[in-house]
Image (cartoon, rainbow, N blue to C red; front, side):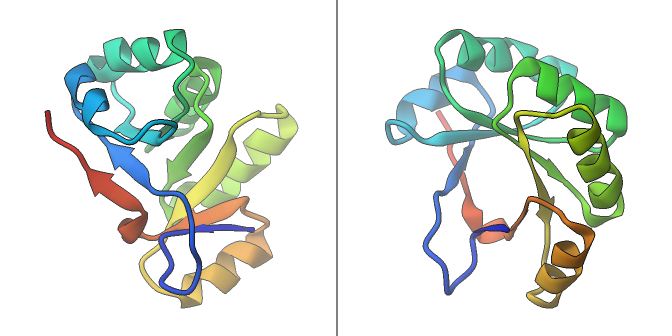
Length: 130
């Protein structure tokens, strides 16, 4: 199981951007974090066209499928969607890993029992402005 943003474990950070210009303010080879929605498609396509790894946070199964097809490296879901998202990812052999956003350490165990690829604490996300 992957763990991002935990105080005990060193992990890669995700850089949350809201426009293409903000990419210039992120470290090289960083993972760009976006919330999936239609208004971000220009940013997503820019990331994809420039071979920049990115993370998409989604709220629905439909958005989960879009995120995989758009080339996200990681797809972040809330705990209510985690089990279904992981099953869909395994059924369709997603390249992306499913990460569940968690708030408490006790949720690590619950997500492990569900077979979720990984968990992410909010500390893993760094907000970048342009």
